[in-house]
Every structure is written in C-alpha cells, then in structure tokens.
Image 1 (cartoon, rainbow, N blue to C red):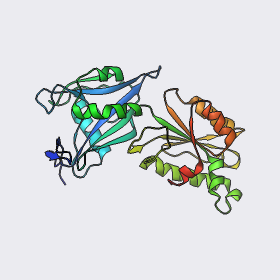
Image 2: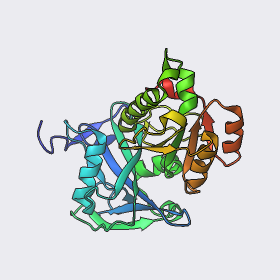
Image 3: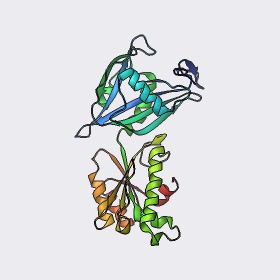
Image 4: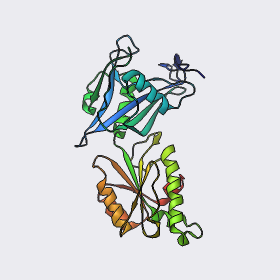
Amino acid sequence: MAARDGDGWAYCGRGHRHWGVYGAAGLLAVHHDTAGTPRILAQERAVWSHHGGTWSLPGGALDSHEDAITGALREAGEEAALTGDGLRVQGVYLDDHDGWSFTTVIAEAGDLLDAAPASSESADLRWLTPGQIAAKNLHPGFAETWPVISRALDPLVVVLDVANIVGARAEHGWWRDRAGAAAKLVAEVGVLSGSGLRTVPDGLPALDRWFPRFTMVVEGAARGVPPLPGVSVIAAPGSGDDAIVQAVQDVPSWERVLVVTADRGLRERVTALGALVTGPRWLLSRI
C-alpha cells in the first residue's frame, strides 16, 4: 500500500476508460441557506485534464487502502483546500460501471466554506444552485449521476419512538428495567449512526448508504438515558407522542424526516406534518 498507488487508467465492463485503478470518489458539499435553497461546491476542471473545461465535483482516484469517504475528503483537500472541518457526511452514492465505480460522498456544509483551486487540476470553484449546475457544461460522468444525486441533497433525520420500539422488541424483562432497555437501544443506534443505513423505506432516494441524524425520544423511567455521538436524546416532559410531534416540527422544512413507530395515532399526526413513517421492525432488523 502506498500513497497515490491508485493513479492510473482502468477500463470498466462497458468498455469505458476511467481514471483510478481502484475506482474514484468525489465530494459533493452542500449548504442550505435559511430559505432552504441548496448550494453545491462545484469544480471547473483545468483545460489540460481529462474532460477539461467541464464542471463536476472535487475528486479523483482512490488509493488501494482508502475507503471512499476518506478518499473523497482527501481529494477535496488537494483540489479545493477543504480540510473537512464544517462538513458532515449525510450519504454515499455508488455509480457502478461493472468493474469500476465512482462514489459520490454527499456532505452537509455548515456554511459556504472557503474553497479555492489548490492544484493545477482546478480552474475554478464555485457554490452553485442546482439550476446553475444544470446549465453548466458538465463532465459526462457527473452529468449521468446528477439527476439521481440531486434528489439526495436534503439531510435525513430519523426520529425514534423509543418506548414503542423497545416494546416491539419484547425482550424478556424489559418492562422491569425500561431505562436499561432504552440505553441498550441508544447504544445500538449509535453504532448504526457510524456505519450508516444501506436500505431505507420507500419515499427516499436510493443511496448506497445514508448517514442520518438520529433523534430518540424517551419518556418515564428512561428519561435519564444519555445521548451518544450522532444520536440525540429528548426526554419527554409529559406525553412521548407530543414530544415526537414537536421534534418533527423542529426539523428545518427542507430536511427529510422519518419517524419510527407502530402507534397508529402518532403515525397520522406526523404524516400530516410531511414526515415519512416506518415500523419498529425496520429498525430492529438493522441493529
């Protein structure tokens, strides 16, 4: 394993030539303004480069030892002077070309981060709206995937009805130690937060992995359960259902919300607010 051992040309099963012996990855950094309008950091490729003069994302060949997220962040540093600070990975899209793949790492940016050409491969870098991107002369690979990844720009928040999920799990003795059962679920969701979701319910764009924010609503004896990285915990002061509805209402309007509960009345309340819903079995089958 050596740095830059992925540099080189490769051919896919479609007969196309691609840069990156071990595949390639790029960073789609997206920032939503207060009105919910997304802006994406786009790169104009230097005229001498492959498909020079077109617009795409900062990215390049993966080294043999790199995962796609690490490689995309490295390339963004090398080409756009981004350090990764102020970015949170929210999803990964895999464009498989039969033996060669390009992975788009979608990351939420807390602000319009300063970016500037950091290598001769970048002619320009700009934060563009989706409409502005569609009007550009796009790199052929980016043009092919843009209609798909443009539907996955909005982050996903998963709100969990902990009492309902723990009850659905029905492990022996859980009712005698509700706090312990809730703490176990929080820990398991914490692991899931790090590894990401490979399948999501209908209604969400199909990504290779989603990395949502998880919000867990606890009530009664479970209210002392602490949060974990990637997992926030809301202690309901009264009705757990009311706290879940409030949690959905608190999510910015441009973000997607998925509520996990089997409670029919609660499902009706949150779907009226635009949230998607799924049952506890969906979550329990993934932890």
